[in-house]
Image: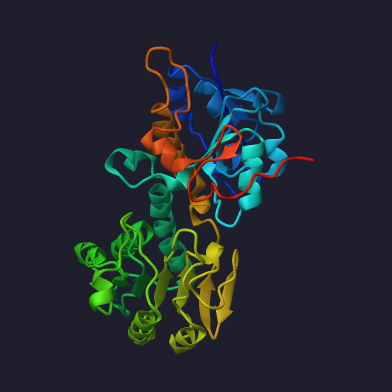
Amino acid sequence: MSQILYVAKETQGGETRVAASPETVKKFTALGFKVVVEAGAGDASRIPDAEFEKAGASIGGSADLANADVVLKVRRPSGNEMTGYKAGAAVFATMDPYGQAEAVAAMAAAGLSAFAMEFMPRITRAQSMDVLSSQANLAGYQAVIEAAHAYGRALPMMMTAAGTVPAAKVFVMGAGVAGLQAIATARRLGAVVSANDVRPAAKEQVASLGAKFIAVEDDEFKAAETAGGYAKEMSDAYKAKQAALVADHIAKQDIVITTALIPGRPAPRLVSREMLSAMRPGSVVVDLAVERGGNVEGSVAGEIATVDGVTVVGYANLPGRIAASASALYAKNLLTFIETMIDKESKQFAVNPDEELSKATLLTHGGAVVHPQFAAQPVKEDK
């Protein structure tokens, strides 16, 4: 009997992405799943129900969800959603579990095998499953598009009979996946680009994209990278030195894009109100970390603010602003991960908690919180 894979419609406000595409529906069907897509799940990503049906899915609702063996989502299921899941179902989503002990415990109590896709290890064989990278790539691209729109001027230098339009100066703070894509996009649009990062390896990557690297390169800087490839928290002394260098640089920029995030921690404050005040009126700052408290003083989640004449773009969920592309990449991440859990002969899906990728991403399983970072949290029982 075919196992049921259910693609749920997102319930969190402002989430426009969907966890499947017609391409992945075809492949899941070929793998032996009966694929059911919740009615309207792809509408905000410009994938109508008919496209999923053409790919081999059926369109369904709560009755199908109650029988689903595998549930695909973009965001962690809410408490109300979980009441419709069957015990033992495997749920794949970006779970955002930090500071959410009650929500994690509720998934365990519901008997769900909950996979946090953002915990996918950054190793070679998991590159095609890395949702943080796929979505950050698009966020970096979209940040430049939003900045260019808000800037209201041309980005490249243009020499015309009527005069010369100077190239915009763009400063990207943080040269991870999002930052590197922002650099590349701004360069393609003709801007003069500079960037900084606390990781020494980023200097070469920034230079390879044709941007200038801005950083205090002391001993702490040379050691500032975690084993997982993420930036780590810097000392207050280093932050002060870097802030002084950056403050002077920011004052000369037309556009600043901040991308600094540390997993499980509030976003570091990179741009103060004083820095904004030093920028020219009409300059633009895009805060990609606004959902984690923001890198920019004065940024407002979901809004465009004006601080001393500077436009501060605080749109949440930038990948969701290009939902069709974001959904296609996210869906492929899910497919390639789930493929590793399907027996080639029986075509049956099964969770192996001891497998390397599962161990890294599995939050709850068998009625318990199993991820080592969260297992100490008690599971609340219904009374």
